[in-house]
Image 1 (cartoon, one colour):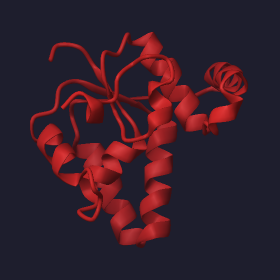
Image 2: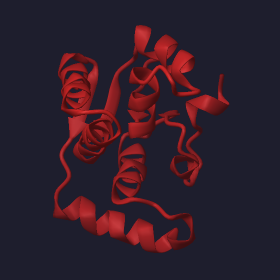
Image 3: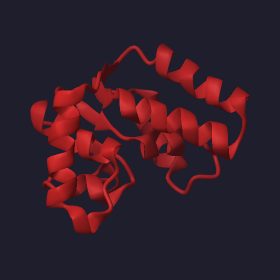
Length: 135
């Protein structure tokens, strides 16, 4: 596994939430992860999910996990990415993409990602396979 993999919020949730139906898959994947990339929006989305679903303690645990994941590169999102994401949201307006999803599509293209760690079918819109379909 030489190239980067894109990691979406749903993969982090599946790994950290034992009640998730994909927990065992992501437990295996995160046991020996390759080089990973995600966006700052995914980190914000994950933090918010754990905060709303559980509490501030679990939300901080999520952030601690992100800080300790040394193979993870977190890409900042600025106005250039927002403009490009908006175009993708318009292009796929029937899909209900979030801004975080659309930025993910951009990053996967930028890094020539071969596989996306996600359970969200939207992230395969541009032809990049989801890891849940590869195993």
